[in-house]
Structure formats: structure tokens, C-alpha cells
Image (cartoon, rainbow, N blue to C red):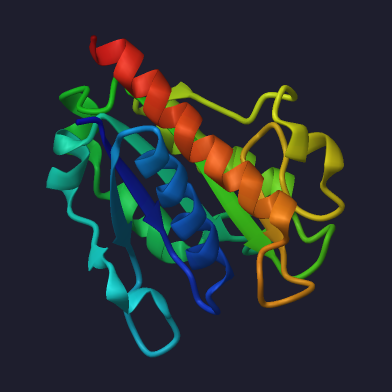
Length: 185
């Protein structure tokens, strides 16, 4: 079974909702969704999922990374995690595995695209193959809030994902799983 690690940080729950929808897509594509988080503490709602360990990178077939926008960048706990992966980088642990990204922001123009791009940088440095959402996904054409070819996203105009945001997230989880499955066969 294709093992997909979904690594995220969520403070208010929106990024966690995207992680859940992505996990739904991973499962629908026949994969195993492994939810991991960073930054456990009083301000993080992601305490239900285990904290990421570097060994999770070794055992995964794919990795999907998510964060709320922080001035157009990922949350500091995710950045701190990546700064501790030099050994995995030197050993090419993630090389040739598919990777993808997702984000949420409190405003429509709150830096979603720049956050998605900065989330992709450590994946590229680790030699991963970046997977996005193609325009063949109908929800990408119909969304009035989150979702882009760079990755799944949510505009926090409400506490709940829109149908299109959820469809984009599910599609991303499916696509990454299918890509990882094809690469391992």
C-alpha cells in the first residue's frame, strides 16, 4: 500500500481540515494516509496527530506539506523541522518521491500562492517531484475561494471548507497517491 505522509501545522483548524480532505483523497486512491504535525502546544489544534519524526520521511512513498500563511511563508515550526533534515538530504531519503503542498489564509490575497511556492522549496531541495492540481480538475475552474494549480488552499471566509476547496484537496491527495503508486511499480 502506498504510504503518504501529510505533514502540516494548524493553529485554528483550517489547515487541518485541508489535511483531512487530502487524506480522504489518499484513501480513495488506495493509499495509506499518515497524518503528522508540528508545533504541538496551546495554540495548535493539531494535537490529535502524532508529531513528525525524521524516520517518517524514510518510510513514506510521498509527502504532502501544509501550513497556514505566515507573511507569505510557512509556519516557523515547519521551517524548524526542515532545518533538521540535513541527514535525510545527504542520504537522498526523499529523492524521486512525489511531493505536494497546501495552505490556508485569513484573507483571499493573504499570500496563498507565495506560501505554496515557499512550501515547495524544501521538497525540491530534497529531490522530490512536485505534483500540483491540473486544470482537468473541474473544481479548479469553479472555485470562488481556495484552490490553485500550485496546490490545495482555503480562504478562511468561513470555518468550513467550500465544496470546491474540498474537491481540490481530495483531488490532490488522489493524484499524489496515484503518482507514487506508478513510480513504485
